[in-house]
Image (cartoon, rainbow, N blue to C red; front, side):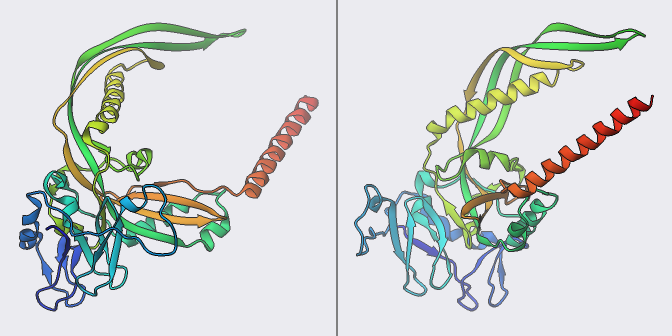
Length: 361
């Protein structure tokens, strides 16, 4: 039976977790460190499929909506006996009562076991600092948002990704222009020349990432790329200790279309970059044949930050390897109006000055 997996310090019995600074597993109580490989035996039960020792949670008080009951699973914490509730995709979490990190091994066994993981390289404090830097220079950001807004939630989560290798055979025709301008004493001239640019060849792609979680917005996950796959390591559950993790709920088969779209866009951009010396270049006709190899399954690190302001929720995501952060910010409408009013006033003053100078002449 595959169930909860907890990592205990053999020296003091405290809960241990993956430490970003040392890239080892560390006990926060006695400061003992262990290399990840020392805990490799914890992963032995992931080689074969197993059933989770779970039960469906059905508390009194309200009736379940359709589909809600089947998506919840609950476990008993081995440290304090508290109940841990997660959804059907939760693979790593922590006990809400004692805080001990746990890995739900049944969610990572057999065909669900990832091939690779990129460990977290930047910590929670770096994520907070990145958000503060994100605020800087935003003149239309509400002042109260910066001064009084608090981060409602910040969590490190390993997001499931499918990594595709692909070969492309492409023939692309671009429409390009060259623009030349000159003038004499009487006129200004513009000459536009049109060209048909053809490019063809083969391009190979390695480890194209496609988000395998339906809970994560694809555009948000793609915005924090790229990840450096050279730092990926063979998966071990010890990397998950102390963080959240989900298993995929979007299959590799259902991710192929997204991978192909990314490959085609990248191929067009790569070939377009070889056509230099033009003023503009656009795709006129594109024939790209994509062949995908076998996809690999990996977990990539992401910091998610949730903030609220004026009744609205704002989500920020940070690449847990590189520190790249993206997210939307609110706009102060009154500040925007003041800025537009000031801009209009400046243009009016400039127009008046020009008119006055012309009158003097």
